[in-house]
Amino acid sequence: MDGMLKPLKAESLKEVFISRFEDLILTGKLAIGQKLPPERELAVQLGVSRPVVHEGLLDLAVKGLVTMKPRVGTVVNDYRKEGSLVMLESIFNFRRDNLDSELMRSLLEVRLLMEVETARLASKHRSTEHMRAFRDILAREGQAGQTDIDGLAGLDFELHQLIALASGNLVYPLLINSFKPVYTTMTSIFFSTPEVVPHVHSFHKKLVDAIENKDGAKASQIMSEMLAHGEQHLIRRV
View (spheres, rainbow, N blue to C red):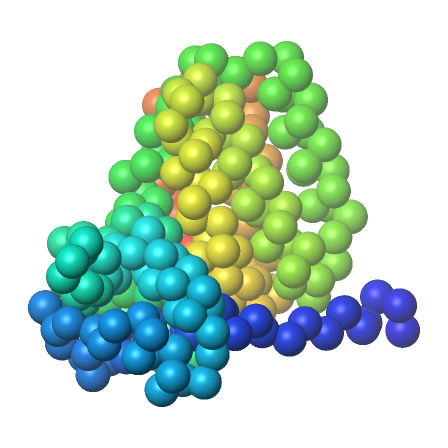
């Protein structure tokens, strides 16, 4: 039972406020350019304190959903123009129960663009310590059960994160980390089909071998094939 039961967590009023306004903006119920009521008025309407409203609006502003203008108020943004990477998780969570192929394909195209290059660079810059870490991940993958979806998704992220770290590029690991909630959700959907697991582990082994051999062209090719394999299965699921 210990491993089955996770602590219960009640959402804070701030989290509920943020979620409510994300929904209103992403559904278009709050129009681009629309000015929100003053913070004090919002607090009264929602039955929360003004600090809850202020902190929630700050979070929405960081994501690019709104702009807080002194002496003007808070205005709804066009998140496609103003949104940041932080916004990606909100969009994904908003569509989690109804993922469309356009969003999925957009995410996969970004992965392809970024990770084929990180694989090539990792082959060039990887260290002995990186290779030990790669082999450790492969060993743990071999021990994981095909139905341990969370474990498999975590190991998959760990491998791709390590490739980004081994690339020697300071920005790639930060981008991978920014994608983590979206990334692990996608891979959890993918690994919910157990028969794909041996294929993924085979790709991982070949990829690590190519990186160890410093064969950048081969590593890029394997990464491209692996992501194409994942795309085929994910698109079928949404």
